Length: 153
Image 1 (cartoon, helix red, strand yellow):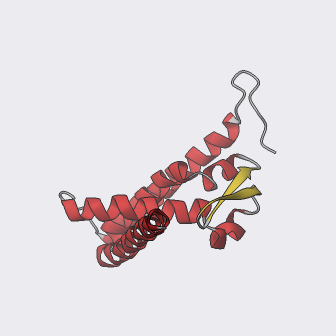
Image 2 (tube, rainbow, N blue to C red):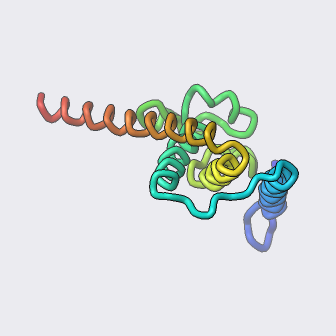
């Protein structure tokens, strides 16, 4: 278990480690861009921003809540219960568990990866973004369908 700061009651050392890993990932992406001669886009258009936002939402939830991805989280979390359609609620074992079980926390990492992808491999990144956006919209339609069916009964 991560050492907890008595003053703050939080595992500050673990948080520093996570911030360092994030900073390191950003530095590696930036170095790859420089070494490959890639430059960021001048601006993001509405379609790119929409794909980025919706796919970040979907991928963050898939990584942090989906039963199929639970083996990736298992070393860092404990299963608590099923929390919704195709979602698990898990209790973190440590600060990494806090990150991987929290869609809000993962969103920054996923969005940063998407931004790096727009620089390093824009066509592939847009394809992945469109795929995750289609999955998110499908999820919302499935939930709306179930709700409408329940209301019709």
